[in-house]
Length: 292
Image (tube, rainbow, N blue to C red; front, side, top):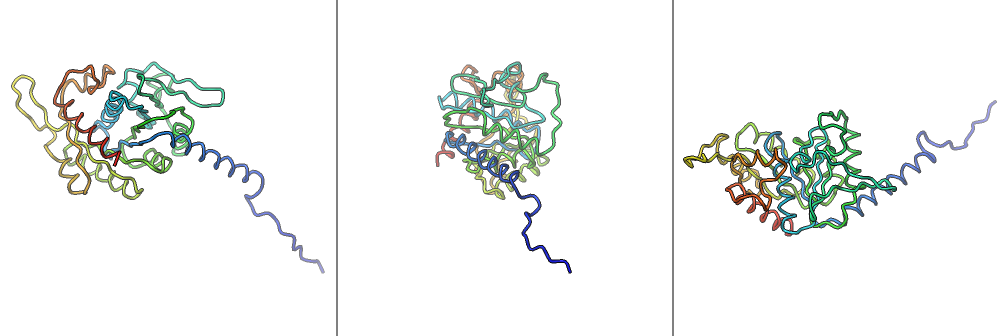
């Protein structure tokens, strides 16, 4: 009669390979936490809807903070449609790496560092065709391996929706100051933008407030106000969802022109406009909210 072998066998998937993987993951998590610990405030700019001007808000927020001499970083995690390089006039620039596989961010000016997938493309027409794991990997690398240094603020421009990119960055950062939610006044945008607020609540991400973009157009000739996309939808949504309303930005030709020319409309060298005045007030409110 054969005897039963009572010798314990290692379970499937355990062993040296898994130990090495666990150690590597722990080291990466520690490196990410140490890099993020050098950044005082982290703000994620979100929107459930595309085309509402979210990247314009993120870029001008970062430029405005830098103009106040806050040491600022701008991270563009829109993998498939990065707009930051164009909005800052930096399309032809590329970041450098170090011997220990770190990434040196580009400098827009003395107070603003920038990184984007757009800087990594050989041609601006190249498409990034990635699934979730690859997107998660590069977002993690941007947070962990970019040499941000000591910053007062990191502004993160997230793509529209509540999918891989915003989920990845919110989970990886762990302790963000909060999200700025961007919308336009019409219902077709508000329906999706409300989902971004719900997304934040499910992830325990504070909402610093909502910004209503494209609120009315003032004729430069007669001054008459025309509400192309209705009026006040974003403000009403913020009240209904129980989040602060940060302010509104009107439609002005110089906003489109400044974006195309790579000179953000709220830059110090731009002439005063209603959009500038409103946005400057929005920035002040965000600063106060981040420091609470």
